[in-house]
Length: 257
Picture 1 (cartoon, rainbow, N blue to C red):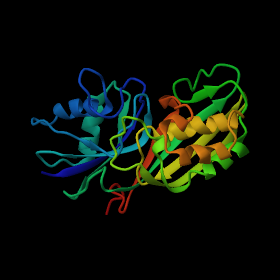
Picture 2 (cartoon, helix red, strand yellow):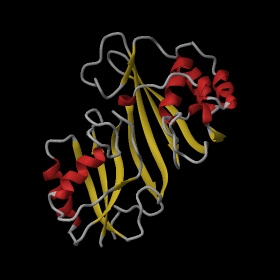
Picture 3 (cartoon, rainbow, N blue to C red):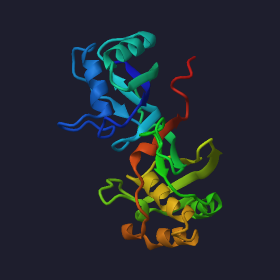
Picture 4 (cartoon, helix red, strand yellow):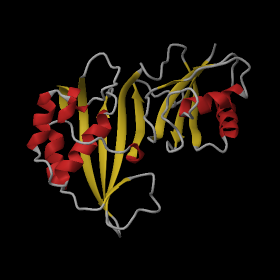
């Protein structure tokens, strides 16, 4: 059966996360419903990352085995036609080797989190950013983030329902950019690693926001990490400011010949 990789952009607000669930809408389930319109046999797609409820994606990747060959362009167009009006778009499609696996073949995942500081309610970006009404100190947040880079036991920043076999992960980047606007400041977090624990990114950002607000000293991030206890974590921030930005493979499946 031919194997296809698809790149996906979606608004996570209407969905209870990526993974298909009974009786609630999911991104995976919606795409599989669209596939059922063009494929007579039931199929299951495998995503590179299981984003949580409300989390968005600009570069989610999935693969699917179909019972017949399609020109990638035609498959891309057919899926987007049957996905309407769902806020999901297939932005690239490619036929790949049968052993390509969107999840297990990924060598890096990059997430972006958008945090906006301003008094007036956000309107245009509502549902796309996490807003706080007070100022944040980016230097303190960067100092706190530095404690998290590298290979650590991230039990403190791991959801109690996380199913990963080990809490030990290597974090390659946790950088913060300050972007002034006419009405406030956006703090854009970029987080890179091969893989993540459940709620790890949102736990990082929620904790660093406390540092930026002055409620935590930057060194308390290290103390929380060393505690290896979930209770030592700061608050978990909301999902709607988080984006799965890109999934990296040894060979780009969408690069073409």
